Image 1 (cartoon, rainbow over the protein chains, first blue to last red):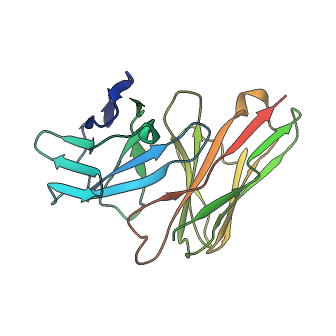
Image 2: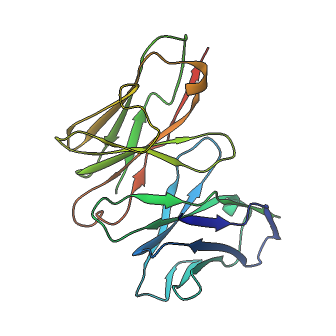
Image 3: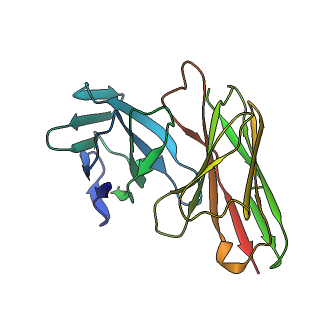
Length: 113
Length: 117
């Protein structure tokens, strides 16, 4: 069955450092991979989308890589700030027109001042 | 752009009553809306997919007669939890995707916390 794995352990880093979060998947060939941020008691907020034919995408301090051979995506936040503390969700979408997303369980990032 | 709202943000009800949750896309036309449920410390679980003007498609294990979904317009979808029980207590989140510019991405509402006593 399709499986998405994100590190369930919280990631604690110091302010100013680069945070790197990992998303691995099996038994799936996604057309798109998306990253969302979720704060406690709130809905997810869309951050970045990367397509299967793209290796890397950047947006301000955020960078996403997508390796379809390794079946892995890395999500980087450079110059991290305490305000970046949240849970980050990886989501995969196939090429069908249903638009359905499959979510990982998320990794909680804690940036300490 | 791509703002999705939900109402109410929280609701407490007695067991056996029905609760309606609204999901609106405020600045784009949502051809497809999705309803998710999230239990504490767990990821989002898709309940159903609805396209404007047609019946919703429910995920395996989700009772369509218990979770009624209506997507009557390009900006509004509703989820009604009928005869709610304590085990239905959860965080319900909708998302929407639409026409050009927002086609590939789902934009989420802020969620509705349902507590059934």
